[in-house]
Length: 160
Ligand code: FES
Image (cartoon, rainbow, N blue to C red; front, side, top):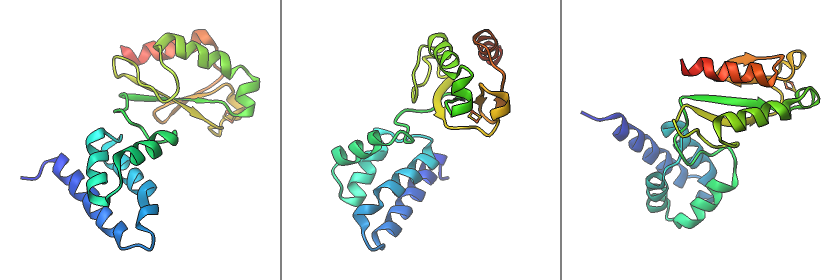
C-alpha cells in the first residue's frame, strides 16, 4: 500500500514532469518549490535532491532560490504558527513591543520554530483587523488589543 510519503513524492514527480513540458522548464523552479511546500509543509534536503535529479538543476541553485524567498520553509513548521502583524496600524500601536515579547518568550525570530516544535513565528502585513491593533494571529485565530502581558498569557494558554 502506498504511504503518504510515496503519495507526496509521486505527486511532486508528476508535477515536475508536467513542468518540463512548459515553455521554459528552468523557470518552473519556484512553482515546483511551492508544490513541494504544499505537499510536505517544508522543503527538506531530500526533496531538493529529488528536484535536482528530476529537473537537472544543481542543488546549490535550488538551495539559493529556496533561501532567498522568505515564504519557503526549510524546516518542519511548529504545531502552531504565530503571525505578528507589522502593518501600519499595528506598528503605531506597539507591534514591535509585542514582537519583542514573543521573541524573548519563545527565543525565536521570524521564520524560525521554537525548540519544542510548538510555534513557528512569521511576519504579516495587515491581518484585516486594524481596529483591534496591535494584532497577532495564531493558526486562524485573531488576538487583538494586545499588551506584552496579554501575549505571554495567550502563548502559555496554548501549552496547557
Ligand atoms: S495593520 Fe495590523 S491588522 Fe491591519
